[in-house]
Image 1 (tube, one colour):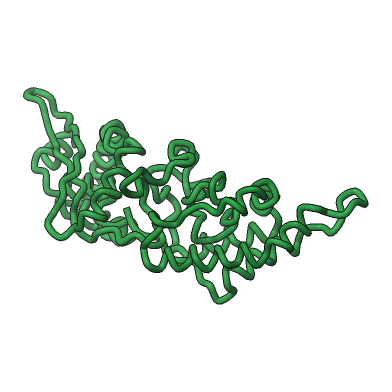
Image 2: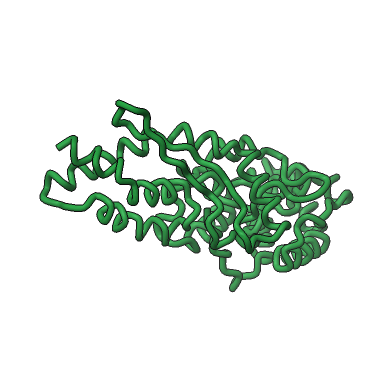
Amino acid sequence: MKNLIVPPSNVPFSQRHKDVVNSKANTVKGIRNKTKFNLLNLENQILARYTIFERAVAQRNLFNFSEDRVLARHKNDLLSCYTGRTEKVKEIFRLIENAQPPRLLKRCPYCGITLPKTFDHYLPESKFPELSVHALNLVPCCGTCNQTKNNDWKNSNHRIFLHFYSDMIPALQYLNVNLHTRAGVSAIGATFSMSRPAGISDDIWVVLTAHYTKLNLISTYNELANDEISELFNTCLIHLRCGGTNVGQFISQLLLTEEQLYGLNHWRVVLMKALSTSNNFSIAVNNAL
């Protein structure tokens, strides 16, 4: 679990919205494009909302960002900016993706498991349609997380999902794994859990735990653990067969780039780190030669 890099704003996000609107055709089948001209008339109101939203992101105060009931009446026209998927919208997608380190978006920021092939509207487009093409409201996301999150983003007390452009994801270990074996069985299993270390504030912890709970991440990691252990087991076995030594050190070397890229609380990093210090795992690999 790691923050995303904030997309560059050398071209202001407000200008990118205007570019999307201006790219719309003036006429549709010879008839004046009412959607485009309505969006042009709403421009000042929309850009004012952009300013307020960007301030809320900068101040890490998204919880208090409220809906605009006036703009909500123009929901369909505002959403057309996104649903049209014009080249200008795709430019915003590329802006977000290109800002990230290579390979980071190999895994969904929300779950850390699968390829993020969609974009989640952090503030749901059904309630905040004026932000449908704002880069800071678009988070690369896998289809499963996008569907699970849906229109949820906060409860009456706090937000329930991390905002990967502004939330300070702790550089402290909060995701843990317990390795276990059964007598007479060489297989190793794993069970994940969360625990709060000293140094994580209440504000961050409630959002962090809600994020993992709402997406059912701990249960999912537990389901995936056996396959991940088997894959690493086979990789280590090949390492030994090719003349390598010391399984633990080999895993530690594999870990270096993974931890740097995905952070110390990525589930695979946590699992690999535990296996790198497990005598039972090293013995099992050596016994399989």
